[in-house]
Structure formats: C-alpha cells, structure tokens
Amino acid sequence: MRVLHTMIRVGDLDRSIKFYTDVLGMKLLRKKDYPDGKFTLAFVGYGPETEQAVVELTYNWGTDKYDLGNAFGHIALEVGDAYMACAEIKKRGGKVTREAGPMKHGSTVIAFVEDPDGFKIELIQQGTQGAK
Image 1 (cartoon, helix red, strand yellow):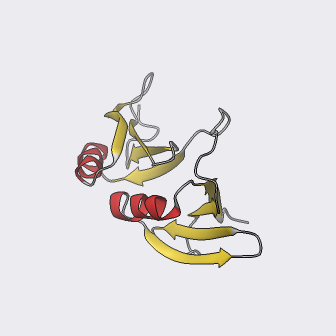
Image 2 (image 1 turned 30 degrees about the horizontal axis):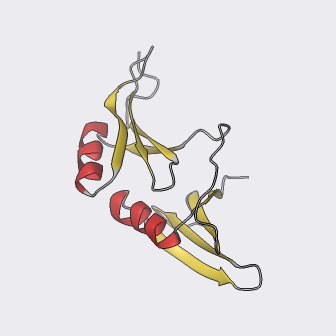
C-alpha cells in the first residue's frame, strides 16, 4: 500500500492551480471536467503519480468558498532550506504565515504558508526533522 493523494476542495480552480504550480513549484499532472457531476478534478505534484503522492484539487462548480473547519491540519513539504523557500514563496506572491525557524520545543526547522483557500502548508527543512 501507499498514499496516492490528498484531496482538498477549492473555490477557484485556476487560482489554486496557479498557487500550487507558480508559487510552490508543483506541476499540473492532469485535469478533467465531470459535467454530469458538475465538478472538476486537477492533480498537482512534484513527480509522477506512479511514484509520488500528489494533491487533488476538487472544484465543485458554483461553490466558491468552503468552511475549513478545525479537523484538517496541513500538507507538509520537505524543502532544502526553509528560510530560502519562504523568501521565494513571498517573491512569487505567496503568503507566509509562520516564518522559518526551529519549532517550539524542538529543533526541526519549519515554516507555514497558506494557499488561496486558507489551507496550511508546512515547510520542513531537510535534515532537521528529529534533530536534537
């Protein structure tokens, strides 16, 4: 078994695709409209779905906003340098909600960014996870 994807519902599919591709550097892997169900699915990620888990962006036609609730936490991405990643994300128009630095009560270097729908994306600096 392996994780295939994480699905999130988005209010503006083009805006979300732009964020995940232009700001986070993912690729649009596939996109398909389902007219009978009135929804569109787009899959984004850093590599082929046969090799890596990806993010499924679901757009339900005519729904432009969702209540995010408080159960979902975040999507985590490993980055080489969290400080540089934050700078690049800001340069590309992304919103950094927690600047890079050691996590509270630990030494793992993390940061958080927010996608256009308010979903949190954690950046974890490679080599610092589980550091003492």
